[in-house]
View (cartoon, rainbow, N blue to C red):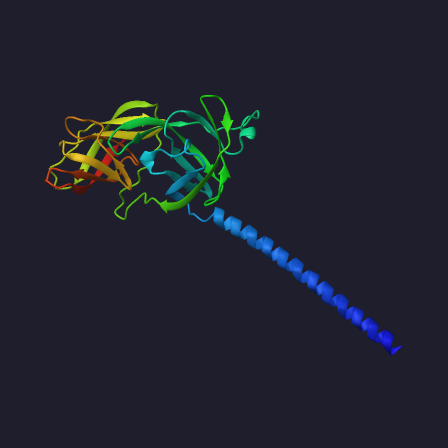
Amino acid sequence: MKKKIITLICISLLSSALISGCSGQDTEKTADKKEAVTSQQSKKAALEDGVYSAEFHTDSGMFHVNEAHDGKGTLTVKDGEMTIHISLVSKNILNLFPGLAEDAKKEGAKVLEPTTDTVTYSDGYTEEVYGFDVPVPELEKEFDLALIGKKGKWYDHKVSVSNPVKVEEENENGTSSNSEPVSVDMEDGEYEVEVTLEGGSGRASVSSPAVLLVKNRKAYARIEWSSPNYDYMKIGTEIYYPVNMEGNSTFEIPVSVFDKKMTVIADTTAMGTPHEIEYTLTFHLE
């Protein structure tokens, strides 16, 4: 009788241990899943809303960001959703699709339409190329992005976005230093806009009104200085070179804000050695 009781007790203890072990494993699995989900959500929401400069990587030497932008695009984060604007090397890529080529061919597939971007190379040459606003599901991780060119065939590619750096849109003194052109409710074309220059020694000036260029509902300005000695302008981290070879230095720059001071740097060679001078431009929309 005692043997039977001891046997039953052992069986009971063994069953409890097995149940406890299984329960512990289930708990660990559940905890791992929760941790993975939390990690995934944290990755997607790692950036606060704002504008960033970020690297855009592809798996092809034929499909990449224009060299004038040093492999980078403008990453915009809004309500946790990320979109990067990239300028390509030409107008040969007609559409992009966030996904696989086979899905891009399906009826009702929503392809990405191009914008027309103006890029400025290191030698001052400017060119119009196609750009795209690409949704970014996650940073530092490859995702599918199909493209179609003039031959009418879709191709699969893997791309990724990494190393975002916040672009300070407004300085402490309330001036904008963002190089992203502001959107305007105006038809594409050329207009005039009054512009006020402040800063420097006070001897330099710019022509006003200036030419306001609207491209794909984005605002740019043609700035003509009172001197031929400016060899480049800088807004944030972006550098712009003259668009003319003779006469006073003239630049085409993005207008990031109207009716508010916009910080620019202009490099002058008038003093013998190149010298960067900080100015502000105010574009008066009305």
